[in-house]
Image (tube, rainbow, N blue to C red; front, side, top):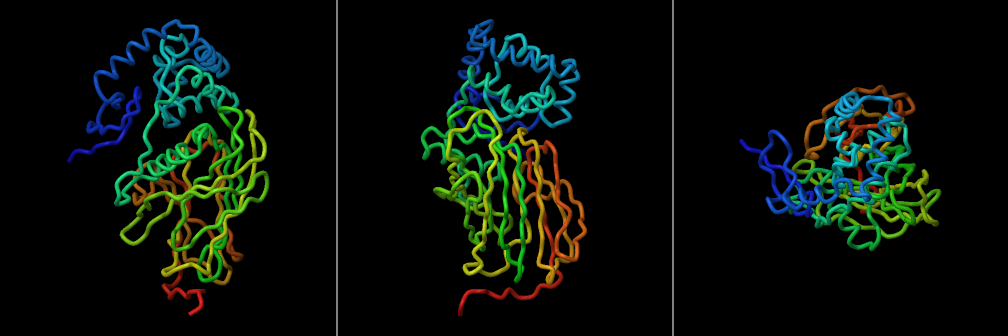
Amino acid sequence: MSTSLTDACEACGTPFVDRNTRGRRRQFCGPACRSRARRERAAHHDSPKQQPFARAIREAVDRSRLSLRDLEEALNAAGHFLSASSLSQWARGAYVPYDTDPTRNQLFVLERLSMQPTGSLVRPLLAVRERPTRPARIGPENGKRTMEEAVRGLQGRIASLDAGYEPRDLLKVVQTEHYQVGPERLPLYTDISLTVVPLRPGYTRYWHIYAYDPQAPVTVEAIEGCRAGLVLEDIAPIWVSSQTKYQLAATELLLGKPLTFKDHPFSLHMSYDLERATEPVPEPEIRRLVTTAATRELQLSVAFDPKDLPRCLEKRRWTSGPVAAAPTETVCLEIQDDGSCEPWRLSYPRPGGYGYRWEWLTDRQFRSRRPA
């Protein structure tokens, strides 16, 4: 049985389906784009325009105090493969890669290995290579999308509606979240603290993308360092099972002043409208998505009503793929008498899904808080 993967041409950005799941990933939609990319590489060879990127790569290699082969092994261990020969071509200025998500993740790992600030290797790349314009895609109408596809589709809608805003230029480097479950086994609130670093200066807003169960509507309130603006919801839901779905949305957070190449922390509060909650009880699970290797720290925690504790609690990790896919890592946690558990702290987490899932003691009926 063959499997097909949806990708985009690195030269023109046109979506195509790569039906070959073995060997090297397909990069171009056809011979014309492949030839054009070859001509561009030859034209850029030894070009002065390339020198800032090549110089930045050489400085990163020198500061890491590792050989090219050691850097290749470190990148491979981090899940972002880059051969020593390709890294050598970048350092010599023989080739400049395209601004794609895999390339950015490779550069983020190189920044970490050479102990450089976030974005110090991506910014020289942006001066040479602009990311191809790709159409916003929301996937099939039946909602059978991966979470990554849904996020990219919503980012495309944001970029098309908000002129001058590129979601990929604002890197989320620190993310701390606490999820509180209250009486009636319904979510009460989520406290979120974020730290972002821009790749280009001048941004005055940040679009926070999140997923929630439509059975428990969400309200986003700014706490510190920002104020809430517009709200944009995804066109189609993401189905977890035949009866469970997630809704993707984005809230505009106005930061007050133009951002510079420094860490910018802010916090927000997400409350769940229990008066409008519908049957049955929302899915006993939370997931948070790490989209890039630029994330330095991720901390998650969950707490429950002490009078109604779940039977078991698991922290889970998912790799890229369908939302309904089984987790790749599951660890059982101990719940304290006050309903809390030990926070989950990760340094430099790999891109993928992280979260919790729990099971209740009994399957008692959901008591709606809405008036009859």
